[in-house]
Length: 354
Image 1 (tube, rainbow, N blue to C red):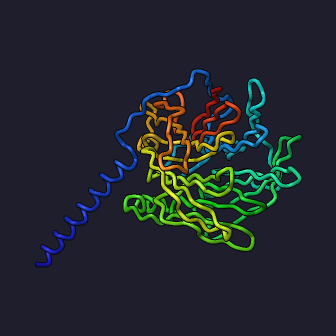
Image 2 (image 1 turned 90 degrees about the vertical axis):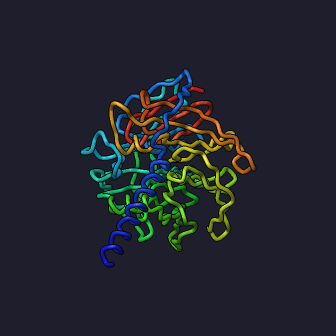
Image 3 (image 1 turned 60 degrees about the horizontal axis):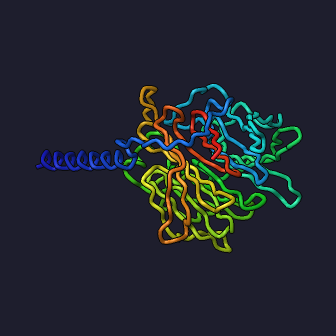
């Protein structure tokens, strides 16, 4: 009798694992091949060779780019080199990237930048907030941008028990931001278990010096985050659920869900077109190719534009798609006056004139 029970439990367990793995393959679009959509006037940006995971463009056309992310399970072409922040002036005829110097009092050797967001105060001083993973932990670093010197002055490191496995942030004011947690566990094998078992334990938190709290939860993997031009809505990507959550903001900084936009592709970082209010999403068309990197069959890239996100039927169109022959592992797309920048987790970056 005991053997029968044990065999029954074993069979049920194997069946559950098999079902979960099949679900995971579907969730990661393991069999999808992307159809190419490539604007004619595009070229790779010289000097960005080891990733351009997130991009934030100032209203006057200066683009900050985070590079060199080391992330568990993801490829990395320069594992021994620290991360960097690059600057690109989109007002130039042929813009070139420049690595920004960082003040000496900051530990540059362990710099591992992820999501970024900018804030401009009433005196027009620019602050750059960077999700950092020194020694695979999570902090938020605040820098002041010195435009004339093309440098960053480190001002503060923010740590908190809720700031674990942070992916992206959107700054709301001085030392105020929303941040996403993309995994509940920090151990790589427990992360895999979390994904396979569909635990949905990740969340969005609000941070200020006076209050830190979880404001929305129930995501498989909360990822990119940005804010609508009128500041009334937050857009959050759930990468493994292949959708964007539109969240309504409240006076106490809590968020409530307004709607969910299904996209059918794995959504990474989000930005907003400042001229139209459209959402731009950097996406991974096939995540298995990203996680099981093969130079002979590399991961592709995909950028979607979502128009009228608040309406009953948003319009979704493809701005860019490539099978990996040009650009691998797209994570973000951002526009400025008819110019499109597409960044990647670990690969190059693309500049297009639309």
